[in-house]
Image (cartoon, rainbow over all chains, first blue to last red; front, side, top):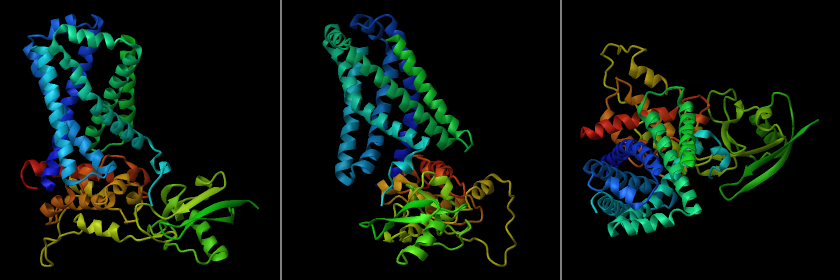
Amino acid sequence: MSTRTETRLWIAQRASAAILALCVVVHLVVIVYAMRDGLSAETILGRTRGSFGWLAFYAVFVLAAAVHAPIGLRTVLMEWADARGRTLAIVVHAFALAIAVIGLRAVWAVFVG
Amino acid sequence: MRNDYRARSHPAWWAFLVHRLSGLALAAFLPFHFWALGQALGGGAALDGFLAWAQQPLVKASEWGLVVLLAAHTAGGLRLLALELLPWRDWQKALLAGAAGFVIVVGLALALAL
Amino acid sequence: MAFLSVKVWRGDELGRYHRFRVPREANQTVLDVVTYIQRRLDATLSYRFACRVGMCGSCAMTVNGVARWTCRTHVAKVAADGHLEIGPLRNLPVIKDLVTDMAEFFDKWARAGGQHAPTATRKDDFARIAPDSRTRQAADAGIECIGCGVCYASCDVVAWNPDYLGPAALNRAWTLVNDVRDGARAERLRAVAGDAGCHACHTHLSCTERCPRHLAPTASIAGLKRVTAVAALRGEL
C-alpha cells in the first residue's frame, strides 16, 4: 500500500470520526428521549417508519461507521496481531462490507419495513 | 527489550488504552446491534420479541456498559482530534479531564434513565 | 551507613539482572551508582556516559522501568525505598549490559529526511527569518533535541511497529519542514507519511512525558499529520 493511500486512510478515519461524533451525540439524545415513552416495537416503529429524514441520517451514520471501524481495526490487527498483507486486507474489507450491509439492512428494517 | 507497565503509568496512555479497548468492544458489538434492529423486518412482533429479551437485568446492564463505552470512545476521539488539529497548548491535560467528565455524565444520565 | 539494593542488567537480550549493594550518599545520581559498581564492585560492567551534566544524552538508561538520563536522576527521587533497577534503553538491540545499538535509531532519523537540504550558496546573502514567525517558532520548539533516544525507548508504537520511524526522527523532520530555507519538502513529506510515519502515532504522549529536554514530539508529529494530509488531498504526496 502506498504512502499516499495510507495517508488517505488516515484522513478518511478522522473525517468519519467527526461525522460519527455528531451522529453519536444526536443518537444518544434520541435514545434517551425515546426511552421515556417505553421501548416497544409499536412506539419505536410508529415513530420511525416512513420518516425519510431520519432514514437519511441513519444511513449516513451506518456508512460512516463502515469506514471508521475497519480502518481502526486494521491498525489494531497490525500492531497487536502482527497481521500484514493480503490476509489483513481481506479481513478488513470483509468487516467493512459486513457493517455496511447489515447496517443498511437495519436502517431499511426500522425506517421502511 | 520491551517496556512494561511502569513506562505506561501516565494518564495519556490510559486514555489511549480506554480508547482502543472501547473501539474494539464497539466494533464487536455493532454487527449484533444491527442484526437486532434488522429483526424489525419480520414486523413488529419480531422486534418486540427481541425487546422483551432485552429487558433482562443483565442485558440492560450490558446496554448501559455499551453506551458508556460509546461515550468514552467518542470523548477520547474528540480529544485526539483536538490534539491533532488544533494548535498545541498547555491545556491538553484538561482535555483528558474534560473527556472523562463527559463520559461520567453520560453514564449517570443513562443509569437514571434506565 | 545506608545501602541501596541495585539490580543491573547484564548480558544481551537473553541476559539477567545482577544484584549489588551500593553505599547510599547524599546528592547521589543513578550514574554515580553505575560508576561505583563498575569501579569498585564489577569492572566488567559496560555502560555509556560522557558529559555527566545533562547535555549529551549518552547516559540514557531504563531506571525502575522508565527511560531517563542517569546523570540527571537523583537516587532520592527514584529509589526512596532503597531499591533501584537499572537496565538498557528499551526498543533497541542490546550489545552488552547497559549499552544498546543505536544504529536503527539514527538510520530512521535519516530515513525520515532528517537532514537539511540547502538551497542557498555561499554567494547568497544570509537568509532573513523573523524569530517570531509561525514557522520559526514551530521549528524552535523542537530543535533542542540531542538524539538521546529516551523518547524512542519510551514509545510503544516503536515496539509494536518495527518500521515506525519514531518520535525523534519525526520531530526532527518537522523542524525541517518548518525551515523555510530547506529545499527537500516534497521528499520529506513522502518519507514521513503513512503506516511507518506520522500516521502511526496514537498520541500515547509517552515521548512527551519522558523527554529530558521537555520537547513535545507528539506536537511535531501532529503537525506532520496536518501537513501530509493537506499534501495528500492536493495530490502532492
